[in-house]
Image 1 (cartoon, rainbow, N blue to C red):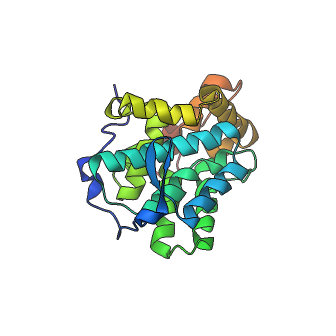
Image 2: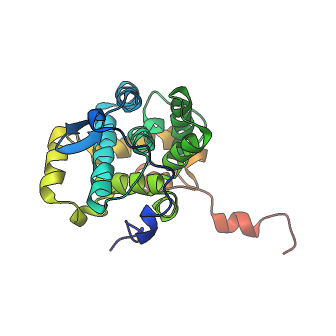
Length: 236
């Protein structure tokens, strides 16, 4: 059963911005996947490597490679640099080096947008990067947004929860995972989310982190959205 619905909406290829496709000289093969290789993407990879723990960096790389693979399989036109930057930096707000007061997706989205601005992205491309990172853990929305957002979300969801696993050739998955091992991804990710719950619980009450708090963090209790509505200072 897929709790987030169709992982690849049929409209995924219809809302792309003007494609930014690297030339043939700006490509290389990583873990069996032909990927764009521009200075911006190289910087994004290094930025993710510097600011992320090893397991989180590998997750970002696998997610990007899965996103690119999905685009190639379905011949989906997209902005390759936006897809790369957004996917490579999608969990940067979860890294130990980031400790702002906002929910980690928004902290990461702000940092990723700043990276895009420094790379010369215009406002539209920066907004797509921000939307991708901010919404990557809300696929029920992200999969129905622009092509780059949906593609990134699909690749992230495949690596994180196995959604769409059957749509990717097993040999491709094996090669990507062998090149960028999971390094205890399940437990490491859970520990990272629990760290945020323990240090800034108010940022977790309305998102998926709440599930980790209720399962793993003693004493954690989020307020009920029903109670908030019913206790609002209005007569009806």
